[in-house]
Image (cartoon, rainbow, N blue to C red; front, side, top):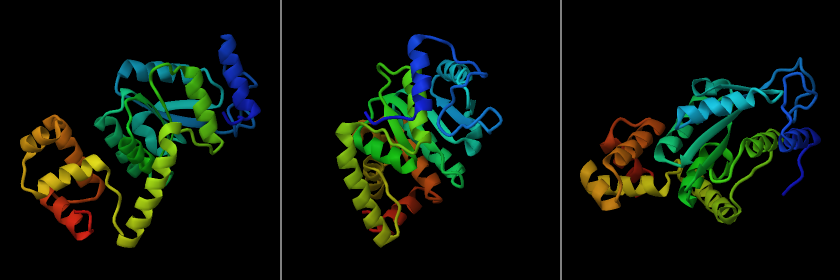
Length: 243
């Protein structure tokens, strides 16, 4: 594990000992020089509202961190996404949030299980710079991850990191030549079947997805690429050499 700043380590040490962190504490996250400076805003999205409320309550005890609701993502310095399993809903929300806050370029900390390389690739293109499994994660680790993000560090699953970086580099290079954005593997699977004339139910059966998942994938592609409908999505893919 790479070393962290003394301020971040101070937060972690206090959490380990169980001592509460109050707003008046001298321990602050990286980058916070004093209590008069603007706090670091952390937007929180959780697929379970109770989890989101709990995370916000805990972060309020950490000096220098100010949790805000997910609908204020445009003003957030860091975005915390918490989901027991990484779902299409979570990935789609991150992509939409990244677009909504394009001027700020928020950095995402993702906490969730079941993420595979294609999903991680998509998450990184949306702005995820730190990811950790849900199983075994605690608030201490989350605060630690936020501190590392504020220092400009990246924390991604080591088993996927090298191959994912290679794929991102190749996709960006190819996309730069063609001027086309990157679509993840599951999006391409759905677009290919749309091009073959299949409907939602047929695509769902073919890919072993639910119809809701298929609709969500199609909606996300159409929204992200500013397309009009499914036919436009197929035409876009063909025109840009994706099919």
